[in-house]
Image (tube, rainbow, N blue to C red; front, side, top):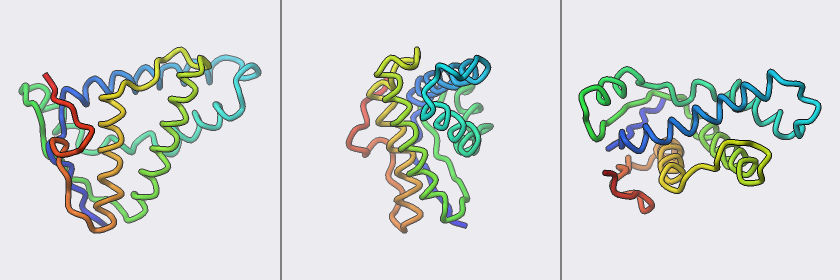
Length: 151
């Protein structure tokens, strides 16, 4: 197992990114309930893999995140103990979410594509798993090049 430390996890950015993810997952659920005859096959495969393989990837220390949100904290440090394969999983998840954004931009989904701030957050978060599994030190959100001030 490898310990991945997520430092300076920005709670307000996370909240906004989570709202978008929730919208996307709701749309995926509706698509799966309807007749898939008019849905592109690649989109159905994408939905199945995102929901089945990565549904729990970001669950992690959700109680700590919720407690920090309830307290009104602006950020929190998190710790995940993951197998080394988590790096490959993070890379695959990033690819799948980028593909979902493509479907959003093309109009095949109703959900809007990920906003720049949420996209930067997603990339930072997933890159931390890849970087730290490879032996690099944790890099806080505040020093991530694409991080934007939250307010």
